[in-house]
Image (cartoon, rainbow, N blue to C red):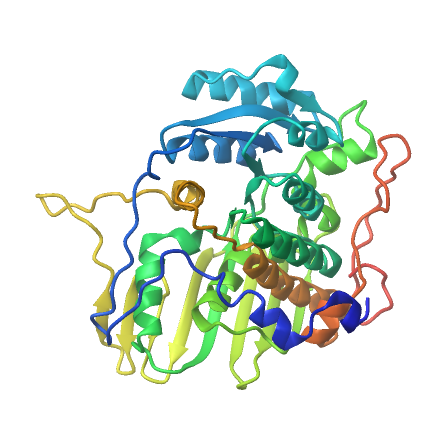
Length: 439
C-alpha cells in the first residue's frame, strides 16, 4: 500500500493518536508535587449496559468477569466463539461465579459467530480472540456502532494495524468508546509515576530498557479429529500468524510503556532472535531489539520464553536528571530515591491492595460511556503493536527496519481465507539473512 493510499506518513501517524494515550491524566505542578491522578473503584451508575463476548477462552472469560465487577447495572447477554466447548466453559464459569445465565439462542459458534452476536442488541463488545482476528472483529463492531473492550495486541501485521487505525477514526466519528488491554495505562501506580515524569522529575528522557523474560507458555499437542486449523487456533500462542509471536503478544506491554512515557515512536530498529527450545509452532524463543529514535535515543527491548532461566518483566527509563522503574520509584542521577508511589495503607501500616488494573480498564470504559465522554485508545495501541511488529520483522530477517517502511508495508500474515477442511499448517521458521518468506 502506498503512503497516500494508506493516508499515513510518520508525522500524521503519530499525530492521529496524540490525544488518545492516557486515561484521567493530570500532571500539574513541578515535581515532586505533580498531582496524582484519581481513580474510582467503580464506574458511576447510569444506563444499563448489555455486553457480548467474542472469544470465550480463559482471557475472554476473565474480561467478562472484570466487566461485571466494574459497575452496577451491567450484563453479559451473548457469547461467540469458534468452538462450542469454549462457550460451554464460559457459560459455566459465569453461572457459578456471577449467577449469570446466557440463553441458548444468544450463544453463537463458528468462524462467523461474531456476526450473529453483533446483530443482537448489545451495547458493548468484549473481544479477546487470538490477535489475528482483532482487526476483523473491531472493524465489524465499529460498523455496528458498539463500544469496545479489545485485548492487546490489536494486530499481528502492518495491514491489520492500519485497519485498527482506520476503524478507530470511524469509532471516534460515531462517538464510541474503545479501551484496549494495555492495562498499565489504567494502573494507578504507573499513572502516578507518569505524572511525575511529565512534570520533569528525571529531566529529558535519554534511553530505556524494557524486559518481558519468562518461562514458556502452554503448548497443545494435536488431538485425533482436529483439523490443522482447529489445532492452530487452539494452540494460537505458538503460531506467529495468530499471535504475532511473543514480542508482539506479550512484550507489547513494555513497548507501550515507553511509547506512553516518551510520547515518541522509533525511526528504525535492528534486532535478532532465535528458536532453541520450542516444541511446537513457528515462533522464536527470544528477541533482542535496539530501537533508535529521532533524537538519537536508544531503547533496548529484550523478551524471552524459556524455562529455568532468570525472569524479568519490567521497564527502566533513564533521563538527564535521574531514572525510574516506571511503576513506583524515581531516583536522581546520584542514585538517591527521591519519590515513591504512596501505596494506600491501613491503620496498621500494611499495604492495601488497590483495584486490579484489569477491572480498572472496564471502570474507565463504562465511565466514558455513561458520562458521554468518549475515550478511544485503539490507535495508540496499534502504534505500540507496530513497534513490536517492526522488531519482529528485524529479528526474523536480520535486517534494519524503518518505521515508514513498516507502516506502509503490504505484508499480511495468515491465509487469505480460513476453512477447516482445506487449511494446511506448516512450520516455516524464519532464518535471518535469507530470503525466507516468513516475516
